[in-house]
Image (cartoon, rainbow, N blue to C red; front, top):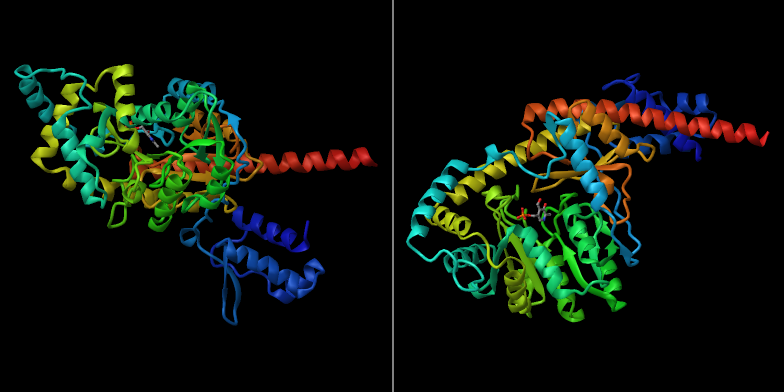
Length: 490
Ligand SMILES: Cc1ncc(COP(=O)(O)O)c(C=O)c1O
């Protein structure tokens, strides 16, 4: 190992174990040079490395000082690399195993749940709209013939598209049982079992499960933790001609929280058109933006109907009502037929409830409040993780949604951490759930959509302690292996 790294690691351990505390001055370059018997350039390189990690700062003519934890921010995760080879997905068993272990442990602090806290939704108002809908439905035909969904609900959804800069006709919309069904139907319409689908890595486990169940293979495409799927890598894969569809989540991706910039969304829509490959756009978190504007859907740049846009009210208004939709472009008719074949229609009472609520007004006000709550929880979680986790961890910085991704030191086994965290009353979502090949064994997804800010502080404190001890055990194991290897050589 390079000498400068040895020096940086030694100092890192001292800061991490609080031997060196906030405000302490590091040894001068000259003193460190003498102590480590290296040249000054090596020490300067080590100090710069710690500075880049946000651990120390240089003060003009005074030297280098340890920064206070509250001012530190962990670095972004490294770019997610992928081998875009077609592979079979194997996650269903693992996902259920994690669900069941979590359920048995009944954790008090939920960072693993994919759901938000019900308190964040105006459920009393929605339920009142539900009661009124029930009265209306008694006097009208409950099941309409082979309908793609309530005409009025589709009109109201089309109006919401307009406000995000996207023109979608109500006739292009099929109402589904959540976005989940919209995505599953889209996949069934545009692929055949055995086909290969391009996906981001890491990807939401429920989509991986659907892909596995349909019998599709995946090509994982490299992804940037801030800006989403790498379009050059995607184009490279598309050029081979073996990709039959892409599934992407450009807005506040689950599990990372990345958000694709507008100009790249336009490029993505262009790729779909050029290679005539359908893009399934999972956009369930788009309304949960912390900035001033909702990101424009890729669908807004789609000129020839290759984008199937899937959305729902599950994350923005009414999780239990299971109302989603697909704006399926050139595949609309095929998708509607698939919907009729698989479940006939979506519960009319739920559709009518949302019509009643949306007509009454108040959705925008609720969304503003929801975004404020999530943004505050996100800030709290980012601050707590930066302060409590070892400084060689990395974390994403979402600008919307309610998930963030953490990369732990390589030596930490996240499945073991998951079990220890549950025993301490905290749930997490381990990284291997988000990978076709059960990779990301040192990563995890944390949700800030369920716990209160006080629980976030407490839960992250507990997790930080567990991560530190797992990391130290990992380092000790590595040292032991090295010692054994060295003694067996002798
Ligand atoms: C990324 C992503 N897509 C789709 C869904 C499914 O949404 P719905 O509840 O509307 O079916 C979820 C739900 O957790 C999700 O996180």
